[in-house]
Amino acid sequence: MSVIDHKGFHAATPNAATAMGWRVPPIDDLRSAIACLKAHDGQYRETDHPVDPAGELAGVYRHIGAGGTVMRPTRIGPSMTFNNVKGYPGMRVHVGMMASRKRVSLLLGAPERDLGKQMGQAVKSFIPPVVVPADEAPCREQVFLADDPDFDLRTLLPAPTNTPEDAGPYFCLGLVLGSDPEDPAISDVTIHRLCVQSRDELSIFFVPGRHIDVFRAKAEAAGKPLPVTINMGLDPAIYIGACFEAPTTPYGFNELGVAGGLRGRPVELVECLTIPQKAIARAEIVIEGEILPNKRVAEDQNTHSGKAMPEFPGYTGDAHPSLPVIRVKAVTMRRHPILQTLVGPGEEHVSLAGIPTEASIYNAVESALPGLLCNVYAHSAGGGKFLAILQVATRQLSDEGKPRQAALIALAAYRELKNVILVDDDVDPFDSNDVLWAMQTRYQGDRSTIFIPGVAGHVLDPTQVPDYCATIRAKGTSCKTIFDCTVPVAMKERFRRAQFMDVDPRPFAPDLFA
Image (cartoon, rainbow, N blue to C red; front, side):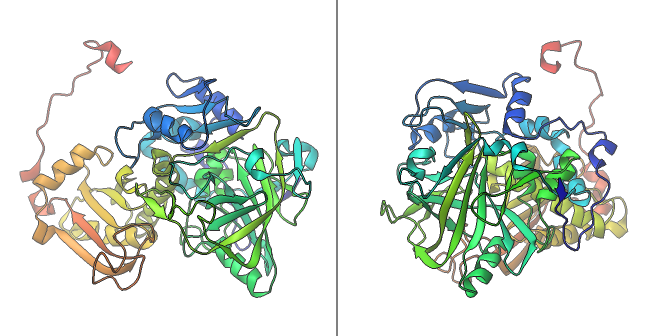
């Protein structure tokens, strides 16, 4: 077993979670995560009813547990395994593992309201991954080589489509692992939009600024392919840890160390069979491949739908006319594998993107303004990216202005954040009704709104285009807005909420407080 160090970074104490009193469960893969959920009522279900991965599977889960920005009717519900996937005997598909904050709490061990703080601690106490021998890697139980004439990605793996107008079948939870071709010690993991294009090719969409796209550009400039693995069916700590972004995890920081910090032990990797790259050893399914230099395809070349797939803001994105191509070299998998997926705009994206967002904001604000920020919630309405609720505690006149400073820090810490709502410490940031109450009673539009125009945002926001607003000069720039719904420090007493008697309700309604 060998350790993959973070170049230029130094691992801290591995037991930060334990020190904080969080009970981290013994999970190291998708199967142990499912076993954990089975022990809790209402968190997991499976079905043997036949399901078509082309639109039907997502359509079913939309009603059962997708949540998020999915068009209503939808709801927060259990995660679900489909055991009988039409056309794919022996394959199973799991959806919704992280589509509930309560479920993420059960899987990571911290209370729901402390998940952002737990993730913030994990960044500080990262543990680098280790390499294990191939015979210790469950992902190697079955091997399918792409040079076999019978190999066909389309019939081997049940990549779902979310809607009938999708560009094609997508791997929605494929964690891509790549390395800097000029310095292989620098690696990165990120979730990307991966559309199956042929028997052995995928297209890959990069949001601007992703480190693996930097690796790809370097390899392409040298006329070389970039070896990558696509890892599916993982410990949820790996997926959530991978969703940190710069500046919290700068260039050269391998986010697999965050999952190590969450679990208190390193993520296990294994050397690939067909490319000079590593894969996550306990993955359900691994695709080994290369991003080809100077080759591009239209994302919807097979369907001409004009659409890509539903994205986290709740809309189906346009198909990209020219995307890089991954040539598949091999697929390895466990016996009786489980392909893991998500519903694009659902609550699962909120957990994946939002909890790392909360951690990044909390760490940055606490470092600059110690003791001011009580908590932060990356709201579901923004897909975990666009909207943050900051709960602050002001105590004295010298604290005046600090909440707005905290909001500015939040916008700097997470580039894709669009709107910040500031509330006092007597308002629950996780309760939208309470937040809206604060806006109605502690906010005046002309004095409590701060506009910051022309700032880098997110290309998937349909309003961040010049056609929508003449002041936007380029796609992916936005006006950032701060809504200050806090009370002026000198007026705290006037805005004191009604104080009720503190009574234990359990003797009166034990079934409601079990």
